[in-house]
Length: 599
Image (tube, rainbow, N blue to C red; front, side, top):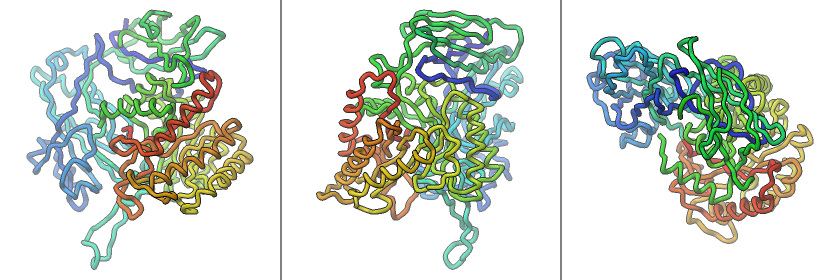
């Protein structure tokens, strides 16, 4: 038996989950087992922002060489969290540049003395960062929202007394034309209005650019011979389920693997050996989304030996999803925490898994450097989430400037690369319905459209929605002959504002607008419109502007998760659809909603 251990959730469903090809290295979610230990580093860290003009004083003075407090004053910063909302220092709210985190950790003696143990530092999410352990450069990475890790065994197993570890992490939230999402830095040089060196960060998306160590940081151990990655694909043959597994083991060629598949009652239903094989399950129970089967979200466990993140908020949100009768969402506009994906598997919530490809609005963002980085990000998304049965589609971008010729080639390459990583799942990007000549649409498997009729234009004219929505659907389907998802629609509403007849920003207007959309959606729902996703689940923070009153208010719930009138309308609609088709087993229709607050 290999001394490494891991567990993967296997679910057998009506779609064929494909093998992720060409991915290098694994990113298994750390779980404790008889041969693996975890030490969470959540809590208070020392924090310091680099307010120097060039934002590089920390590197010039090598703050990582000694305890952070020795180079200047620090403050306590909770991890996971976004630093923007924690301090009363107004400078941190919109800070752009490098910030520094540090924490000292005492390691168990066996971690530092047992040379058969491998010690790994794992960062759940940080935008662009560099990491030092005891002053030694350990890891650099570009990109946020996804986990990364480094083997630090050689830094902690160096002698009899290295039990104290100092971890220093520098994070840069600057957005450039080659980051995802992209952005630009604008220097304002009129010294009669702005001080010397004054600059602002320009973004091209509608949410606040929160930054910091936003997901858990932890240390974990494996044996030196360990399971690095597991890929599970499933199919159905008559009434039997087929589970194909492929296991990557590192550290030695001398090992033996035993594989067990357990059902939801923890009974062994199939066994196997070796790094790859197929398990057959007669009379299989399939994984179905919530409200599409009398026993949804049935999960098997595949064992190869053993088994700013807010759990209360996460459980509350999933309870609200079930209350609404919703069974799907898109991870707009970045990959959500791994715990969210696990909850989707358990609750039967279907996921369109989207990368941080948002704000691709300018021609200069579609360059070769950006393309290479975008492909790398999709590799990381697929590598992390490939074994989740809840993930049914990959989304490579949200509202890119896909009418541009350069965007067409760029999207074609990213979509093709994603399909090569996982041939079994459909790939899409979310289009702005205004782009009649969409250069990327020919390459997707499903058309996803965002439109805001009677909100961003024709203000207040609710009577136009059905006509304009029908025209949108008919034009796109006639041109591309592909299934369509209405991936965003909605209106901003300030809770407690009321007016009859309905006026914009009132609860009545949001409810009436949704009603008009639903009439239009119902006309196409049994033809080629296969899903509808309300924007948005809950209100969320954005950059300040005259058009945003303390953030985006398109949620059907407030940020405190209190319902607006539209929530009850959606609940009535979703349960009506569920009861009409209960339990369909072969119906692709899903009633869905977007959520920008799962992090």
